[in-house]
Length: 225
Image 1 (spheres, rainbow, N blue to C red):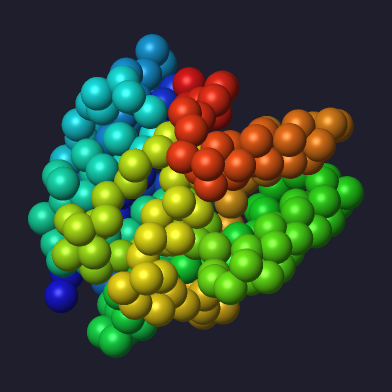
Image 2: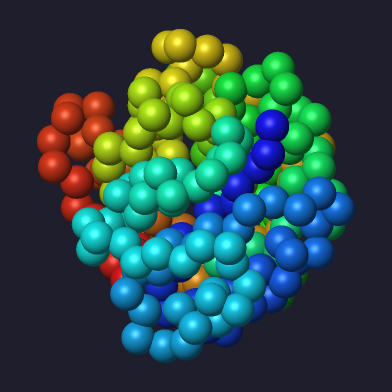
């Protein structure tokens, strides 16, 4: 089975070119799909240089953009990474092998930029999130490094625009096992991190987590601009 990699991006001209170059350099070549969030910078034109398909989203949020990505994708396996990720050269090849007997996998994130303190904060934060969701009885899939069989996405598409990875994984676990595999790590940028970031995100994640549990409308906020 072939693999399509979907990158959702908005105003990412400083980062997306490197991401797409890393995808073009994979040992196993994927189809590259970029979903542009109506960028006002050069993101769209840069994407056109490297991606196999570039589409504009419907201005309904990141969940809807991710859905448009898999619907546009040609292949039976759909992988997601962010515009500021630097996928390891054998990332797609590893996915191809690991997805033979799985319906959904994800892997650890680690920062490639930022100072030492921010890197420590990031590792502590991701570890806490992983442990928290594990305590609820299932594995949390990370948005910048999540892979699905397309037939799963056809039945269980993204429904919300924040914590969309959590909400989807919550439904998928009812029909099959999600695996978190150390073999598919993803380097990510921590450029957004600053003092007070973790407290504000904890509050934001917490409020939207409760809204999902109570099936109330989310506060989308500023995370998909």
